[in-house]
Length: 310
Image 1 (cartoon, rainbow, N blue to C red):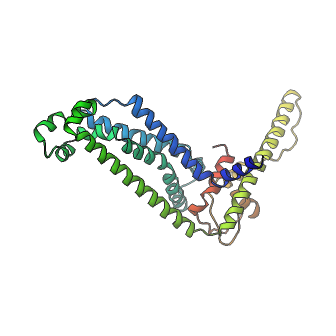
Image 2 (image 1 turned 90 degrees about the vertical axis):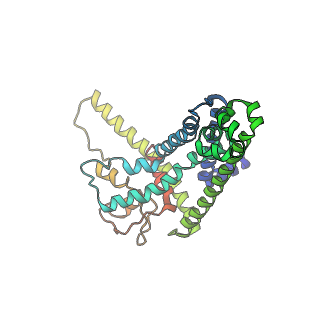
Image 3 (image 1 turned 45 degrees about the horizontal axis):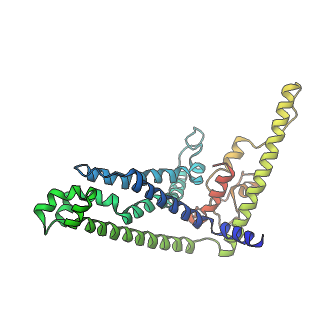
């Protein structure tokens, strides 16, 4: 039991990293299935279009899915186009500051797909074998025979051994794949370090913050279920036994709206969530007006989005 608790604590502490790792592994497994079962290079003039489609199209779909499954996106856009919520410079700034880290998260799966596809080399070899520029590069020493046969190389092992161009295409693909992985990892490390260096709070306060949000989420879910159950019981009871309904206090539309804005950190007031801010600022009636969105505090909106069911 102690080992299980330790493992659970580790998963909770590193849930973001583990989440990215799981997404990357699932993407790599999907690429393997596609390249082994679905992908069949036509070995004609369609090579370039067909190969590029298998590299780019799934990556684009995974990018869109990354947006669709991110809680911050739905927290940001829900109700923002209603007549009551007019667009302003502040709201546009919120969109920009929220969408930049969301886009970075959504790019994990697409870049994994492209990197794994390049390392396996099958998609690239098919696409490159029909490209005129690659043909000139690969066939510069054996132009006559290679130019006419390069498109058929992905489908003919004997021909690929005879010309040797297929291994050259594989080497190109894997070299680009490893270069892409190195660039992505370097950019991720630099951006993470920069984000944490610009953090408005200390390391241990961040740890406390995450614990608070976890507990707030648990309490919110319990209270929300209890409140909904009481409201449902009252309404059903009055439906079957008509009488004047007794007053029942429940959050208004404006109250729900106030706790659903993207989280902004204030240097003057210490709030750990939008609910915390709503309660401490006279139930949302007053605010310091100096809140700033920090990418390193994105976990606040993510936890808030989970509470809302996204």
